[in-house]
Length: 250
Image (cartoon, rainbow, N blue to C red):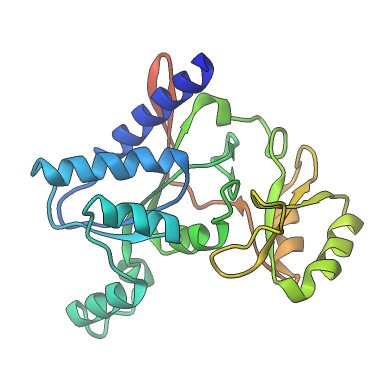
């Protein structure tokens, strides 16, 4: 119990430090999971105490949307955000300038030295990656137990698969060396994502070349998305007993 409590404290510290980077008027992407819950609570507290104003948040999951709404955080859809951006900047073609989200804050299951990630332990990887790709900056909040010398050391790679293709993709993943488990929910049924797909957790062991593996997964029509987040992270906020350390991409 003590170790679990200690990790919660560390997650809270990392989340609160990342939230300090939010400025009034920003559009913020909200990831999912237990660590992100601390960020949601920190944002809500700043809004309530008039320490932050004018922000709009885009949630990555049904659960995040429900919790943010409960705490009074202003929310919007991608359609609403893009419509506002185009109205403010008609004719603008610079994609970087048009990226709708200023900062996305999210957690991760495993982080390597190059700030590549394994995500999806909570089953929200598809929408989380959509948010990450639509963001000017991606902030990852973790405790030090999530740091790994090589992805795959401690976590399998979650892979979201359309139902129609499940058996086909299982066969393919096994052919490229994966040890597989179909994710189950609390009732023992196949876990269903927010987009009505299945998740297969694929263990490849230590992944020597994450880009090569990602390419193999990207080329499969039945794989909707995978939990390898490569080159998307701007800053990792890693909490330990020594405080919160920031690591940023070069």
